[in-house]
Amino acid sequence: MNKKIKKLAVAFTGPSNSGKTTLIEKISIALQKEDYKVAIIKNDPKDKATFDKEGKDSFRFSKTGAEVAVVSPHKTTIFKKQTSSIDEIIKSFNHFDFLLVEGLKTIPLPRICIQRESLDEKYFEVSDILAIDHTINQKDLPLNMDTLDLNDTSAIIKWIKNNAKEV
Image 1 (cartoon, helix red, strand yellow):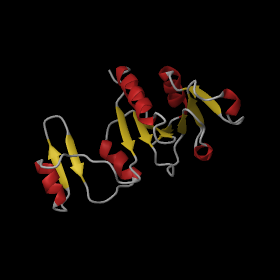
Image 2: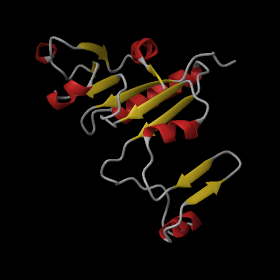
Image 3: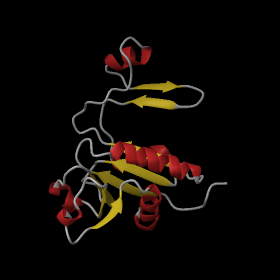
């Protein structure tokens, strides 16, 4: 039975290859094991993501310039030819307990900054907490930011439950 909570959102930021996607996957799986519904939004600032394979009907339809919906028994995939606001995307998800957002630094959400190997300070001003692993020297951490262990999914989920924003 699903817990009755409000729609809560949190964002993740950090340099490329810092582990954002891996962490979001782990959190999504763990929350769903607790019977929460999870939605995920990923930012693609360089428009690099591909969603269909060349030669497939949906790819061919999309190449015509039309907006395309692919409907199957268990999912619906929509290919739009324009961007959507965060509010439009949230409304399209309907039912979720937690929304996990990768990137989109400009939206005002509590934000976990993932850092590995070295610290990239340009993310600090848009972050509420750092999630780091053993590759970060504790002496290099900013004094004004709390940290989470990047490998402690339970502690990160606890932080999310206590700090996520209702959307």
